[in-house]
Length: 277
Ligand SMILES: Cc1ncc(C[n+]2csc(CCOP(=O)(O)OP(=O)(O)O)c2C)c(N)n1
Ligand code: SF4
Image 1 (spheres, rainbow, N blue to C red):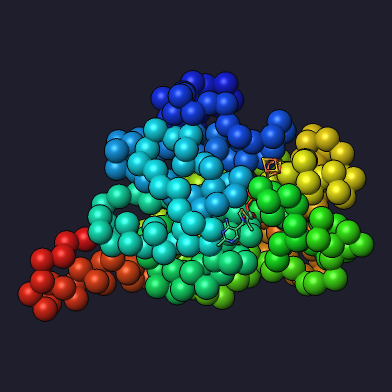
Image 2: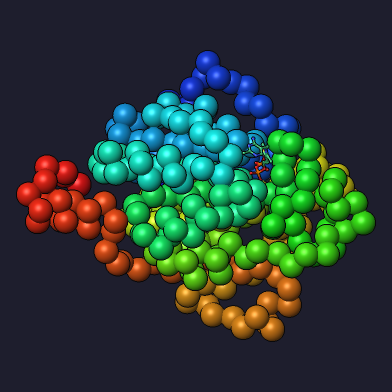
């Protein structure tokens, strides 16, 4: 893996800099991890497409020297599915906010997982709707504040990992922006995985979530991530009671099952069609 400070500029679209992200936003950390993963992947950037929806996270494709699509809020996976079916050789990566993937786009999320189509979801989970001003999301933790729940959230929280596993995703991982050095490995693992892959990355939004919940500056928010997560993957299984309310991080599933574009190609071939995966 390239180390901190290594030159990743070739992966970034310099003419789009600076990014729209606020100083200290975790989305910049995630973008850097994607660039590092692409460096390690070594694939011609013309064979890679990054798609985003709407939101701060949805801006990610603007900044990469790959093919790019800026789509609509919640519909990234519908566009990505079409793109992958039209050109199965493309490496298709989606950058989605937690609101994008798990609120308005939740239906697309579970059905893309069920089909096991070879896409990578990088799910930027900052626990809030960032771009529109800090509204409550399905990932806002219980009791935490947002601009639409100023007295604290009374709803239970969606667990991305549980949802992805239940829906049938074949690579499922969670990490944090605190785990800066490991983040690219999770992303690379997801890109290389031949099926529907989800990497949830807990990310800091200092402007809304941090400020509304008095979590301090971005470094304090990273500290918070460290103190509220536990490595508890397939190898180090830990019970829910032992987690004591902390979130497990690690790779939770990595399994091979039939992939959608390949199944579609086989079907077309059997029926005398021309589609090639
Ligand atoms: C169909 C539709 N509904 C609502 C919106 C307004 N909208 C834009 S971004 C956004 C929320 C973004 O939050 P999230 O997806 O979590 O991404 P973040 O900005 O936090 O990275 C909303 C509700 C929209 N653009 N389109
Ligand atoms: S509003 Fe929050 S998520 Fe959006 S760029 Fe600023 S810090 Fe990041």
